Amino acid sequence: MDKKIVYLVKYAQDLTDEAKINLSLSQISYSLIYSYNAGLNLIKLLKKNKLLWTLQNVRIICISSKVGSLFTRIAKKVSFPTIPTSKNMIKILLNHNHTI
Image 1: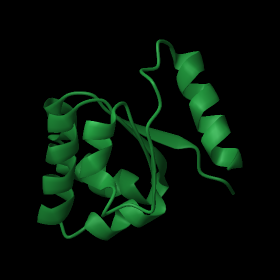
Image 2 (image 1 turned 120 degrees about the vertical axis):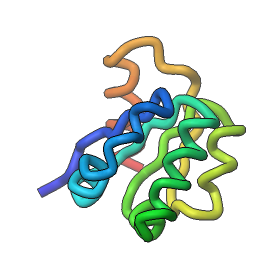
Image 3 (image 1 turned 90 degrees about the vertical axis):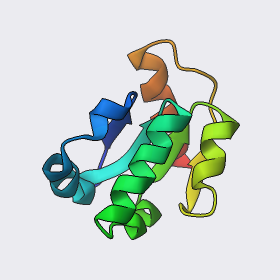
């Protein structure tokens, strides 16, 4: 079964529920990171819970190369799309990345 869950990180407060993150990490196949601070917070939270290795199983989609630079040493696959303007654009990016 192919996992297609997107873990959307837009603001730092999206990362406050540690139990939610721990439960959902096994289901995540893509993570769309909107901001540099949210990326930093995600990395800190994963380090704190000794779950940083889980990023090896997730395709990270970063809105800019600045955000992506946080993940290039940690994750296997990091993409840098332009800013998606709609949910359909995000779906197109995910489908495109899935076929690579």
